[in-house]
View (cartoon, rainbow over the protein chains, first blue to last red):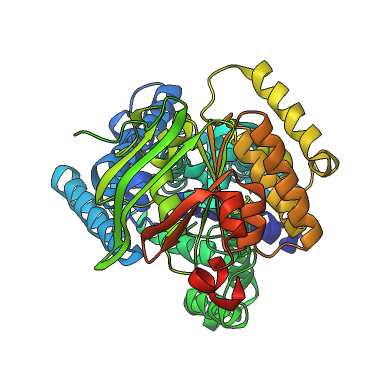
Amino acid sequence: MNSLQTLVDAVNLGAVYALAAIGVGVIFGVMRLINFAHGELISAAAFTAYLLEGQPVWMRVAGALTASFVMALLMERIAFRSIRKASAATLLITSFALSYLLQHLIVLVFGARPLGVSLLPQLSESVRAGELRIPWLELATISSTALILGALLLFFHRSRLGVAMRAAAEDFTMARLVGVRSDRIIAAGFGISGLLAACIGLYLVIQSGTVSYRMGVDIVLVAFVATVVGGMGSLGGAALGGFLVGVTSIALQAFLPESWRPYRDAFLFGLFLAFLILRPGGLMQPRHRREWV
Amino acid sequence: MMHAAPQQASTRLGIVNLRAAYGSITALQGVSVSLAGGEVVAVIGPNGAGKSTLLRCIAGLEPVQGGGIAVDGVSIVGRSPEQRVADGLSLVPEGRHIFCTLTVAENLQLGTTTRRDGRAACDEDLARVLEFFPILSERYRQRAGQLSGGEQQMLAIGRALMAKPKLLLLDEPSLGLAPLVVRVVYDAIAMLRAAGLGILVVEQSVRQALRCADRAYVLRTGRVVREGRAAELLAASDLEGSYFGASA
């Protein structure tokens, strides 16, 4: 029964990391940008839920989704559009700068100490099935991730915009040569990324009951590792990579000897480092991606 | 800014005194080319002559340093590649560049991105393209990456046609294809010309291009060094020796 509990925990964390990795991966797909400021999109949702404390839950959730979505679009328009053609290094450094800038804006307004916030506290309670105890939050996370993944799958395969985004991720220049508008594709990528970041932000608020200016940083680092493990540029790979990192993390926590557990993350990242040495392209590296016509 | 006016009433594509450079290297030094509807014009020349640069400039992938490009008398200089597709230009680039992870159907659907004439018209053109290249019909739901080189070339042309272009730009359409497949591709080009499409073909395979074209321009180090009727150029005994060496 203990291993079943571990399995549920692993699927839960895998689901969260998968959403974070897709959020990072969707931007990389259309723009070759690793957006470290994704963490601040997560914070934007969380702080909005904090600011709207006392309002109905639906309003706080809608507010959080809107805040991250709008902020992602603004981020693209103000910080990244003018340097879209710059080198990957310039894009990366800009995203770091933006991340620090936004973090310190949060500090300026809300301070550096974590703030308590309560959102759907009933989700912290658990369902009992024999010896198994599953928090409602885990059930909600796993089921909503499944729904979001399904919706993304439909979007990318059934909608014109989604198909155009897949085409642009594979060969951006050729996508433009068939008439796909680059502004639209990249803005859509940021919009989706913002919505996914909001889901993570809400999850973190419910799970931890606090908001802080660095709350998105760690998860974005994990998401970045997950997209590399999955194969840069592949959304399926990002989801799989995220899931794998989450599951491995919980497995290490469960099965490492007690005295080794404080070093779990060292084992986790060491494992993926070894994996990348063996398979540098990641799990699902797109074989056909091209930069230029 | 003034740009090229068409040189004759039927001219669909008018390029006048076009200049372009890669950094400090001049790639095009005042190239003028015209193309009418229902006409196939070949641009031939050795490697590095500027043929592909010319197509990239027309498609909007390279900035021009001077001169004009006009479609139906309207300048397209400064327009983005995606706007030029809406203006009626479709490029089939060298190496085909089909979207390998997408299905044949999705590739063809993407070709209609800039169209605003409704689904029924797109479906009609889809039926026409599939009739034109029946193999695409058989492979309709397959991933495009699974197609053979020749099938991919047909898909690339089919995708370009789905945009309902006024002008089709083909960059090395026979490169890397088996002779039999090359014939199929050039048969298709002949049929498209008969349907009234203006086609600009860039080729290193000189004889193949000249046999199919109405007129041709010979490009060398970024200049047009010769132009005329394709049949006359084909008959010119000095053509290969003068411009291409033994490899032509």
